[in-house]
Amino acid sequence: DAGVIQSPRHEVTEMGQEVTLRCKPISGHDYLFWYRQTMMRGLELLIYFNNNVPIDDSGMPEDRFSAKMPNASFSTLKIQPSEPRDSAVYFCASSRLAGVSGELFFGEGSRLTVL
Amino acid sequence: GENVEQHPSTLSVQEGDSAVIKCTYSDSASNYFPWYKQELGKRPQLIIDIRSNVGEKKDQRIAVTLNKTAKHFSLHITETQPEDSAVYFCAASRGNEKLTFGTGTRLTIIP
Image (cartoon, rainbow over all chains, first blue to last red; front, side, top):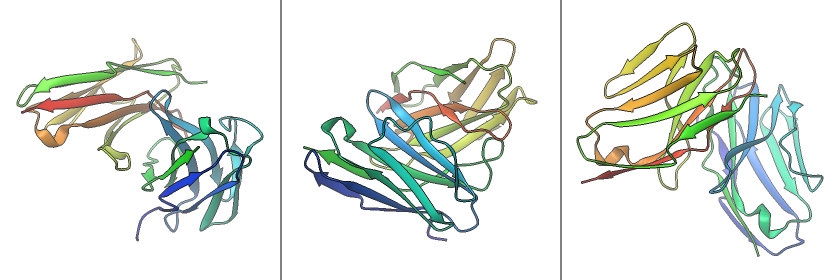
């Protein structure tokens, strides 16, 4: 398996523009997580899915953020409109199990810069 | 919800010396404690984990200890090498719930 695949790897956009980040989890993994990483706040969980269903979106900062998982092999994280404070590295991760025994396999991340 | 605190935020040690990173957690029901390593510009990767029925676990030069009574766990790296330089994250969860990560420790190994 190629691992978790994220795109784009880098995105530079202007404030107010829509940003869409994409993720393909490892085949057979039932859980998919979206994390945001910044120097100030470390790794923050934004939302996670189990079998394509959102389970916990309490980490989504505000209504500008939305995430979908239309099928077991694809998820998107959308920011509309984007703001400079959204600049961060966004990681997607998948696992067979959450919590106990649930090793997270991270993608390489999408580095977002909002000007 | 769970809260995980990690110390120190930065740590520099001479090559060959030992490094210790400490984490505390708030939820006494947490029972799974993994450690992830993130090299510069790379993705976080699991390096070792421990479950609450075990007090210590070792894998070559790294070890993790858990004190359930005090609700803290630590990562120990012995005989440090340049390739140990990275950011290390601790995390905690209970049952099949989501992981809560600490804020990370940037470890620098001085040659």
